[in-house]
Amino acid sequence: MTYSLTTVDNTAIANTGIHAGWFEDFFKFVDIAEKSIETYKRALKQFIKWLAVRGITQPTRDDIIAFRNELKETHKATTVQSYIVAVRLFFRWTAQRGLYPDVADHIKGAKLTKEHKKDCLTTKQVKKVLGKIDRSTLQGLRDYAILCLMLTGGLRTIEVCRADVEDLRTLGDNTVLYLQGKGRQDKSEYMKIVEEVEDAIRAYLKACGSTEPKTPLFKCISNKNHAGRLTTRSVSRIVKEALRNAGYDSDRLTAHSLRHTTGTLNLKNGGSLEETQQLLRHSNINTTMIYLHHLERLNNQSEERIAKAIF
Image (cartoon, rainbow, N blue to C red):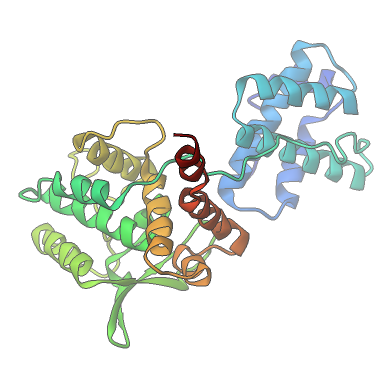
């Protein structure tokens, strides 16, 4: 695939001292996933437009810092970070090729908080959410199976979308689902399917009537894309509707909240840090540590002790 920024005004690009052809060569050079390339394209388009509006013909380090600071005013920290990473990599490449100095070297993006941006559910809330799903319809059977799977295995939305019928297999005495996680090229990891979740999946597949191995495990039921593969947006919407139907309508409760719920409930009910890391498929145990720190803080009785001393 060819990548370029030709949708940006070519005159604007020329006026910055950066040649449009460099972008195509840059995207051929970087060895990253397709989704990351799309992010980098958006970032560099934004940067070029920003330079053009200000009449900057030879961008300097100060210009990039100013660009970052303006981004911070209107964008999330994660977006700022990804945009600056793209700009940094681009100028590192131009310097290596002798095309333009590395004016972005060591410029920091945005400080990312280590705290979760989404809340998790309590056991009582989980039961209420699942109990409110109407399983008398095909859609209800599907949605119930999806939520059960996400809650017990900590699945990301992309892992739900990528799952095929043939990924549901037997390993030893267990039924397992092989997964293709974020940034993964194959389905080398798996989660164990407990009996209640397997029953939910089998009930949905039976009602669905199609269990061809290569077909999506969870299918669209709309007329527009009937039996097609769900998108991450579709899965997010399914979870959000289930949460709302149970009375939990908050910006901090989303599909990713189910993953947080999985990790938190495992630790609360005796799971070790290493077991939780494996369950959530974290490559770095420091990511899993966030769940442990959160629980340790909740179990800290300092406020209660102080209140008891005062009152």
